Image (cartoon, helix red, strand yellow):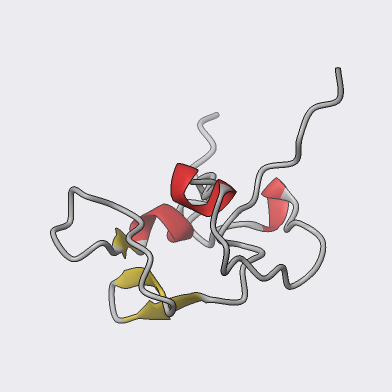
Length: 82
């Protein structure tokens, strides 16, 4: 059985960042925990996976292109212990 590719915020043209939050410019809630539907930007900074259930069936999803490889996600680097 063929695995379906997950839609991610890294690829959606409607994902936006303002201040410390990631949100959908079409108004779709990303999180119920934040109260405003936005996600904390630290998830993006750590390079975490951003494939949410709401995105998988979103009628407004608009792909920017190929997925961002995991090694190119985030900007916070884990310290390497010697």
